[in-house]
Image (cartoon, rainbow, N blue to C red; front, top):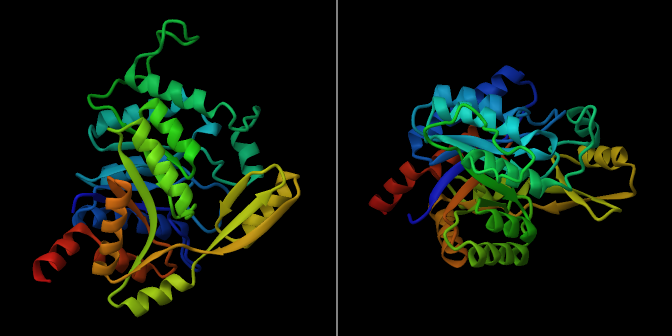
Length: 335
């Protein structure tokens, strides 16, 4: 393959399963991903949620690095509006010092939760995300130790300085995010599993390539693989995307209708909740690979990060194994 494959794991909570077992499954999946030849393994940030357990990616990343040997591990992503860029870089510099060459720092623009958890995260402060570009630029300057002499924090360093810098990625689902990533010289990961509008995806890909030709462009896609097309189609058919549309013009994607309704209520704005069919790439390993091959050719995608929204843990694990580089190599050899 001319592209790489990675995994995004949100640590989904299965009814009747303890939080310990939920996070243990994330550790087990990371170890399997390494064995199966995946390039990287990312974990997400969601707050005050009963459907996913990944609330602190920087802590989970450190544990996963200790439990694996070669696979790259990172955040998908850190919700920067809540945190000091300086502290974020310190955290990831510590990780990169301990595991040089294996750490990814994915940065997100979304709040990662409902308004109540946002207020709690920003206790004593208020940040609506309007200074996101300034925060991200400062974060990059800290990583590359090139803060301008005119900057208010000129001379500061985020110690310890690691032997290999963490790789930074901007996560987004819009053309504006693609423009910002290109402007700052940052790798860009488009969340196609959140925004499946092909027109937006095409414009974002073209914008990023035109403005940063040598940048790394990743597509995060929803994928379900099964031994037969019929089973994969059945698994994909149950999946929906829930969005809350606020009167201010903001649109956010939530895990459930209940969460979307709650977000709308906590926002203090008029809102509308809509349910959409999820745009999922499904099929046998060879069928899914064919679709990824086509997307790679059309949009010049360097890597796919796979998100597999299957509630059943065994079916979800099987999907990742079937589409793994190790298994696809066998499929090609014996086909």
